[in-house]
Image (cartoon, rainbow, N blue to C red; front, side, top):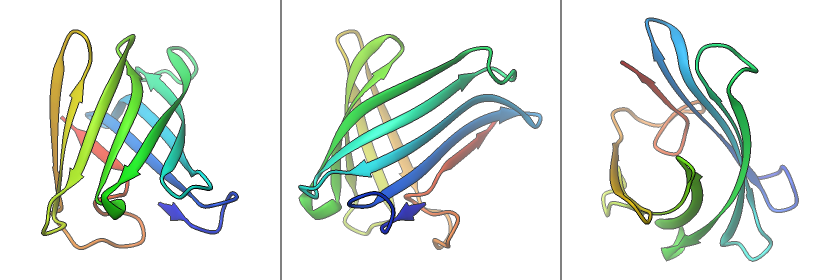
Length: 132
C-alpha cells in the first residue's frame, strides 16, 4: 500500500504470504522507503519461515532503483543465502510485470498479471497472497 505522506519522501508497504490449508508457511512484511533523489529505494523486511511466529525469522535490508519513469526497477536482495539482482519491467499495457532474478548459481523468472481492477487494498503493486 502506497503511503506518499509517510517518511521524508514517501513509503509503501508490501506483504507476501504463502499458506496451505489456512496455515501460514511463509510471511514477508516489507517497507519500501523512497530516497530523496526520487529513484533510490531502501527496503526493510521482516521474514518468517514456517507457521510458528518467532521461531525461524530474520530481518533484512536491501536496495532498489526505480527506472524508466516508474515502469521498471532493479532490486539487489539477499535470497537463499546469496545476493541476487532482480530486474522488474511493467508491460506496455500496464496489466503485467515480468522479472528476471539472477545470482551466481541460478536464474529465476516471475510473471505477475492483474486479474482485477486495483482498489485500496490490492492490485498489481499491492501485496501478494499465495495459497497452494
